[in-house]
Image 1 (spheres, helix red, strand yellow):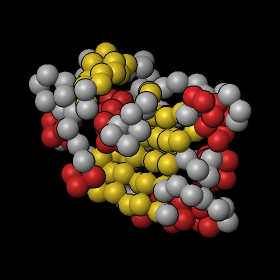
Image 2 (cartoon, helix red, strand yellow):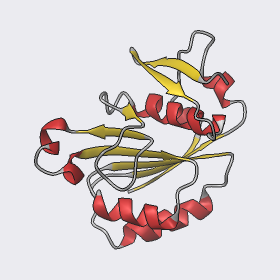
Image 3 (cartoon, rainbow, N blue to C red):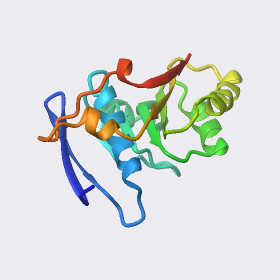
Image 4 (tube, rainbow, N blue to C red):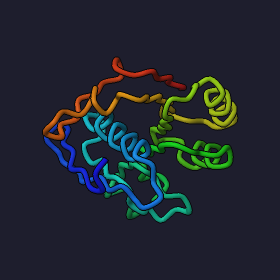
Length: 162
């Protein structure tokens, strides 16, 4: 994978950068999350700080709401790769109206599903929590030679927790 990769989905483009210690799969998962949810959240951005101790891999913020309450302004928060139990509980509790997503690379989602179900049980959430699984070969399946990303939920293994 090149250090910088310009990808396009739904008439928007983002340059994804592979960090020095970052795995290519991590960058691909960010790109897939971005492309998958862009139709629902057209202002999705990648790797920006949101004034929180955690930094999302992919995020959508309601700018008007952000002036009043940054936590309430988060509409979508996507994570790829390693996400610990503490972070899952924190996100579920502090962002009840945010659509939360965790993507894993070639991992069984069942243990993560149990952890997420436990995390959301005690919190009154109004938005879903999705778990996604990507695998080897998905880059070739979802990204064409011109950098266009085409992906739907029907193309992947995923679990939605309400």
